[in-house]
Image (cartoon, rainbow, N blue to C red; front, top):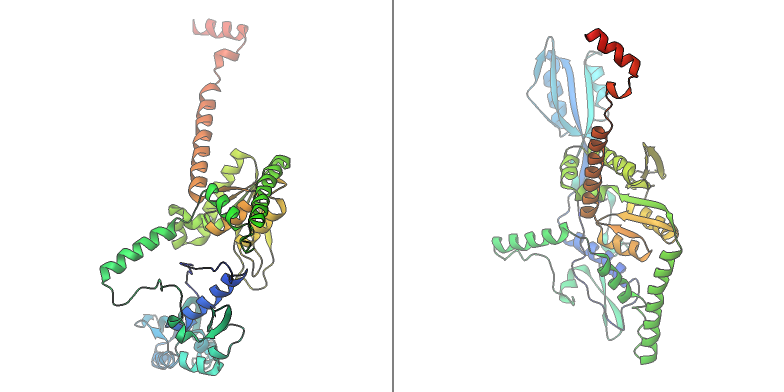
Length: 413
């Protein structure tokens, strides 16, 4: 698996006659593969963070062993008659070292290991050679591309693709000046940071793509497509009228919102669990104000063997998706099943997901709009609370009987 990478579709071109459904999907697979063939990829492996406690007389043996295991350590510290070594080492080399420590220290030494994370593999060339993998021979994940000429497709090896490309590469040229690179990267970051599009733009895309792969050029067929597009619009209106508006759902793409809100993103960089908990608490307050079925969906698709997990957290529902199912897929499936039956709103800033959700007749909230709505709802709640505090004050003299009041007056006199 590849890690810590974001893939952006930057450009594409279709042909009125030769482009068919699925071509862009296949082209994207091959473009990713092309990039991996050109990139200088590195192999990572898991590393331990260890603490080794041994008698002082055996510290030399321990340091030698750690060096042989391609590990690194700090200067030994002394605690009584024991020496303490702390450092890191590859899991593959250190996982059986506990037995050796017990043997050569006669049971007095102790080794504690915690998984630190992933670092560069200490013997990458050896591991890669042992796999015997040939990228050019991988038929399931081909490294080359397929181009079209005169209506016929032909195969082009990955190292010859640049000579056949119909579009100019959007990759940075190493010969450009540094300031030009920085300007371009800044523009690209600004484009990527805000991916939301409004509902009118989404509707326009849906109408333009409706039967777009039908290459009809005669006038009567164009009119037929136009009528079908009008049917699409009218059916969307009818479905919104007949749906049960009393049942309201709000689906929140959890990690999308976390990384779209600045305060949660900064917290997530330190502790993702804390960011997730803070978002859930905010949504509990929001649900208490709005009174709808609120479902927040988190990705768990990388957890091997994980089934869809649905939990109740106070007054909201938490969903962790099953293995190989992203939050986007879960939300799209929910929208397809319930979008035209009930009042369904989805909070996300994923542009592609917005188009799909809108096509199912659901309402949309971008991350920015959702944050404003939550802040406004919280402000109204505070104002109502303060108003109730002022109007609900009780005074003793307002509720005491006349007889008791006369007794109090006599006693005071």
